[in-house]
Image 1 (cartoon, rainbow, N blue to C red):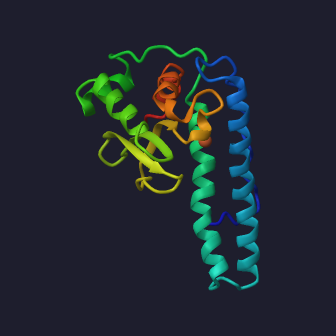
Image 2 (cartoon, helix red, strand yellow):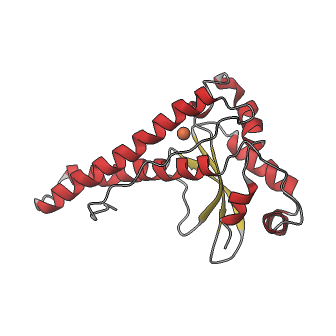
Image 3 (cartoon, rainbow, N blue to C red):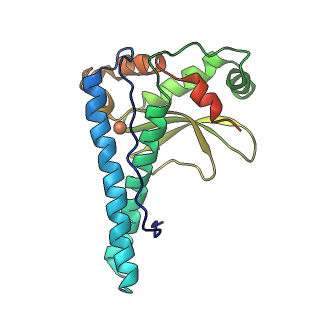
Length: 199
Ligand SMILES: [Fe+2]
């Protein structure tokens, strides 16, 4: 999945200062980790382009760098969705809104969706809880993505992304306090951004 355009992916800037229960110090550390995924994605693309140019595509090196791309690229994009869907001025998801109506249609009601989403976020292991849309069926569903690349479903579009790697919260909370971080995250969701991701 190398990007051979020669154009590197840009590191995006986010200003989330003032979140509820997630400090600026925590965010600064997280932005640095995100920057690492952008840098490594671009580095992998350069290395793969060199191997292709040299005709060295059947080597173990080519295979391993290509596999590594799934981790770095998804790490980059998932963090962008995550930072983008938070705001210091979060409101309530209204039952009659476009997203609220869609969630009720797929889960029965918003609370059932929220229970499923946050329970997935509390699963043991490092990863992500993602609300995604299947564009073929129009249905919304919650998913667990391990590391960054295992659990993404082909064609599904992320609507809400929550990072539950320990690095996302251990500046502010103890490793055993993931549930507190999830509560904080849920109070900072930018519902208008999530709704804008619906077709
Ligand atoms: Fe993260």
